[in-house]
Length: 435
Image (cartoon, rainbow, N blue to C red; front, top):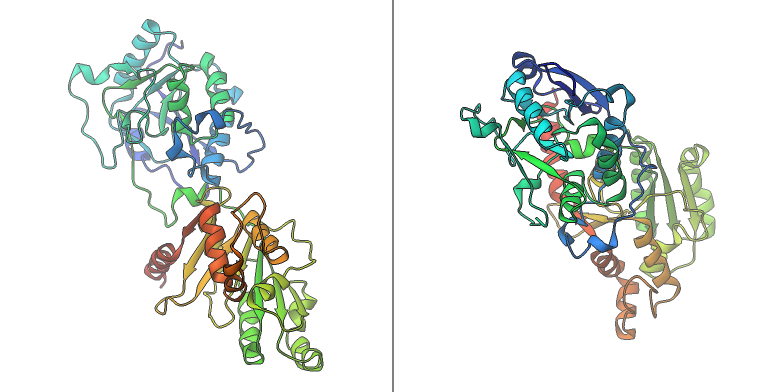
């Protein structure tokens, strides 16, 4: 151990974040350094997976891009060789804020490290704390007690959070391997390792650190792992009356701030002459900019019309497929909103939202395996192998004529979330900051 009395904090930080507790850190005697998060998750091994499903079944819908980014970022941070000679570094996130003087906390840590050298992690908070806790006043507040092996509870606050941890240098490789191997959020990965008696964690008797509320617009689950996914916009035009709406929608999406997209349009219900003489010239600028693929198909049912948008196209590089409604008007930043929403979702979930106030139109955003399930049904209505049970013959025509029912079936079985309230909340936030 180093002989010193000042604690050094290394906090993960990403675009748009600040060190929320900078004043408290300075006042209470801490040094602080920020460390950039990463979206490179190629190091994650996820080797400990299926055997945990019965132990922590409620955590498997939390395997989000944010959680994976945080795991990878923690590994890079705690294994950085610049920090290898300091046992007393406090690793955490940029909202971590202290209430205890650094010298007092250091003295407690030094004593516990010497008495309990087997400890892998000293957690500097007692439980989930949203508001600022009081400063510790009793000696027992500086005690660290072990998390009992076998602890596992959906509501167990003893394992909540990773915003302020001390990991002795000799233990960091071990902790890094836990983050690399366990397909769980960082705090639950530690919980699982303790449950399996692979890890010894001691927990402070007081909230020496807490998470200060963020001061920027977007939630950190978005900012940590936000990247531009390649989005396929799928628009089926089945009647001549929808052509004017087609022009309007293409023009709208051509002016989106989000640029990683391509519009796939399947047109039916018009003659080939009308298509080439009037439709193509009107949207040729989108085709010329390679943002639009427009094709004419014979009359077809609704499900086939949607499938026609990408039929025989190379769609292997697309991460999201948005089924557009030709009669709706979409927000100028709707693609940014969809991308941000999927950043905070489980890796393979789809989403949907209702156009209010009518509630009659649902826009689905499909992950590739959900889109694949839809295409499988369109090619072979008798079954969708390996994804959802076979659809009874008496219901197949209903699904063909009303693709919303089929999409509802597929996404509800494969995983989805409703983003309607998210869009409403985001719109209100944006209105508040506009001049």
